[in-house]
View 1 (spheres, helix red, strand yellow):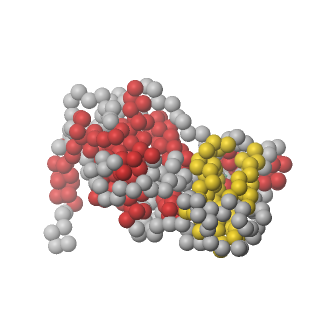
View 2: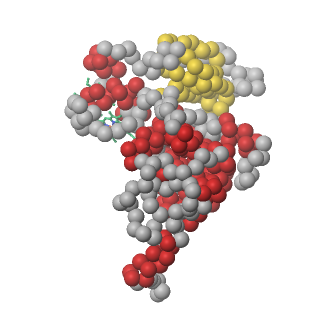
View 3: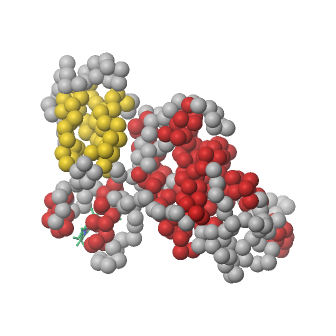
Length: 371
Ligand code: HEC
Ligand code: HEC
């Protein structure tokens, strides 16, 4: 770079840029201003917030995903709506600070950029003690929600997004994790589209709008004094952390669902003995197997859950949904599959997979249809 800025010029230019970010008048703030946070020409943290229309935010988030990715998209969706309502400091805030976060951080598949970007706005407008409370609700909600949501699928079908690239409803999946890798891989597997496909990008665009919209709802509620967290951590976190958390062995710090990566390191009977609780989630091998034309599939739940049980072919295409996220009480259930696809046609001989998703639990079993 021949015309690289000297450090002095950089600082001077920086001062000019932040001078343009003086706080707009009359905006509500979620908390009183911190006297420590900024010099005279810089907008003081926390930044002002006003109640936003979540559908406006959903649209901006969806649109901005296509400009610079999910993390930027969710951040910008909120910032653009705030700039329209409040003006400065939002109008000149460099949303590009979030570009790094796409694909779970420069493609690393770590924290999904959408909750990462939206939580950055939570950080900018909230009192310090509230940031992790509000961001935890956003992350927790993310792990348990069906994406894309019904709202964004419906908007795409109705052509009410500004960026109108794909107007089919997309398969919905629950990731059980805030990790981009997990969220994407589960969707790609269930939907049968490649990771590089236009459909997968549209899925992430809708998800980006959805996450920005939910962050706006959280902040609207916080501003109104009516915020109440809905997220309840999966049982494993409480169970595992009684022994591994700060009050016992103190070797682990995490809120992520433990069994998604560890399976059950102690075997369920072992942990059940240790903590005196019944067994965990289970999907049995179908019976009979091989089968023709019908087979039974049994699953168990340790607590009430919405369950999605679906049959896929060897190419990962959805053949039939046996339960569609209906709620089941704790217990053991048997579902029959009559060997027919969604259109009621008998499927060909071959290998099929049943996939069970219940809350944050997910597993797959292989079945053979032999005519
Ligand atoms: C009743 C106490 C208790 C509970 C509940 C418990 N653990 Fe452990 N866990 C232990 C002890 C004790 C060890 C062995 C010593 C150590 O590594 O701290 C261990 C070891 C481990 C290890 C290391 C295993 C290895 O091979 O080195 C992992 C991983 C682990 N636990 C994960 C979990 C997860 C995940 C859960 C919840 C599903 C869980 N634990 C529940 C007590 C418990
Ligand atoms: C994203 C995947 C992932 C999740 C989610 C996860 N872990 Fe781990 N954990 C790992 C990896 C990788 C290691 C290192 C290899 C190993 O010991 O299995 C590890 C190690 C551990 C160990 C061994 C630590 C030691 O000192 O030997 C314990 C105990 C553990 N995890 C408990 C938990 C608990 C409890 C949770 C839920 C709150 C959890 N993990 C969630 C991936 C994960």
